[in-house]
Amino acid sequence: MKLRQLVIYGNNILLWPGAKHIMNISITKTSIGEAASIAEGAVGNNSHAASAHIGDVNGYLVYTVWVFGPDMKINRVVVDPGDGQVLSNMPISIQQMKGIGPGWEWE
Image (cartoon, rainbow, N blue to C red):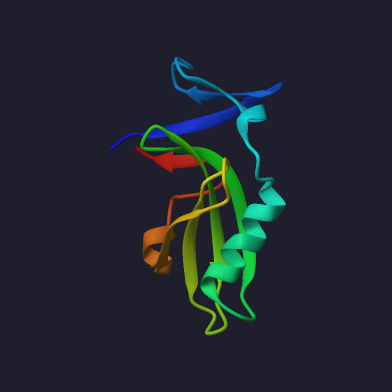
């Protein structure tokens, strides 16, 4: 696995290193705020989005939203920016989160 950093330049997202792939942000129909609300709803009542970013996961442009559930456990929710569908909703441990921050995705 290698890390790729996402760099936003104008209306495009460059996947670094190499910046070989360019994605146009304007293809998104769901805003990052809407994605956060959708993710909160997927986790349950009284959940709160702590962080959200747009990025590449396995070659697809997605929102990744970190949500604290009502039990204060962390979920990683992946939302499709095109139609707002929840693609993944997984509980995540603190150990799994180490080294992962906004702007980075595991490939």
